[in-house]
Length: 449
Image 1 (cartoon, one colour):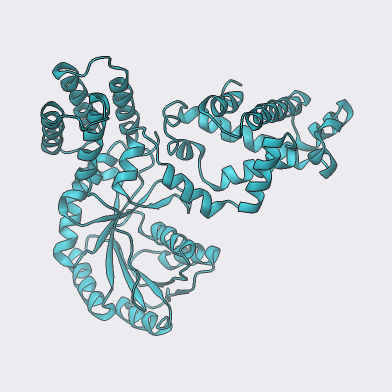
Image 2 (tube, rainbow, N blue to C red; image 1 turned 60 degrees about the horizontal axis):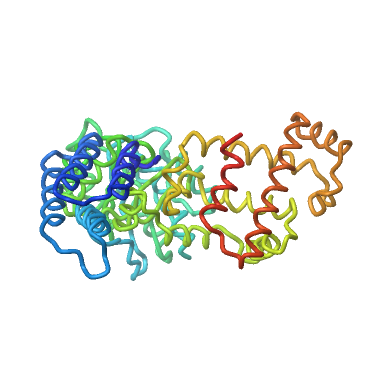
């Protein structure tokens, strides 16, 4: 699992081990608890916190009677899930944008990913129907305004700033006036630096001028347990309403950062899970732990699909797949929709039982293969895309030349298409149910190449 480095993989393996145990007794429970301890400590979670958590899991697993209809194994899995959710806070907090303007003050250390995160939050808010505006008050970091300008222009988000004005307080006042009629205004501030006292004083003054609805602290997930100290230090200087943790896409210390911040009591509202502008999500402890334990997160998958997929195209493609009318055009549409949902490994982690079956390397190879197939399909005519049966040797030669690949690769694409069509037609005859075996066969066509 990419998120939090090896923590997800280790915890998923522990849960698989638990599922495979024939007897759930004191010895097996202790063994599972030790595996959990090891996984968390390796991910830099505070040892005292790990011991407290493991004691709760062990005592509940040994003392509680499973509810009616629940096996001892299922009961232990539920206990592990519940206690890990409690470790990070029980529910998603989110932003309650209930006043106009809703003013968000962004704070963080230099290098925490603050400016990039502002771009990600803007995209998130746009998807929710809000049109945010941004004010740059960072007068310390060279090119801070230029970086924000590049980010906001790509998303058509209005920005106020003046790289020649070195008065952060004046910029804040003018920005407030400029965007007084906007629903959401986000204020970027300077990251902490050596002149810490100057910055703390500036933060207090900005706080008074802006009177933010919410102050959000951005923390780099790779700093581990130090995240807790950082959150406490900022909260002493200003009223921190919530926290965003960035760079959780492979950090071995991510678990440490999240648990340390959770201890401060400030809610983690969002997490950054990758480099792309859309690799940003509302932090929901229940869904997050589900994925971390390899239990999937179908709700997030559905929401991601709703945000990124054209329903009419998806419905037409699915009908064609199930009725045997599936064309290369449908397959290309399918690939486009998959790409919009994000990196394949991230999507697979949301499907129960799928994330741990396919390695990060295999997922990357699959993404590369899909990109290659799309290039080949862009060299085909519309007639060929709608009626692949007409693609014989002379057409294969032309497509290969046009896309800069060997003829064997075009033949491989056609073989994949025919196998997919056959698989989906078979599912259609059985009533349209896409079982795990069918999904695995489709994925296997890529993975085994």
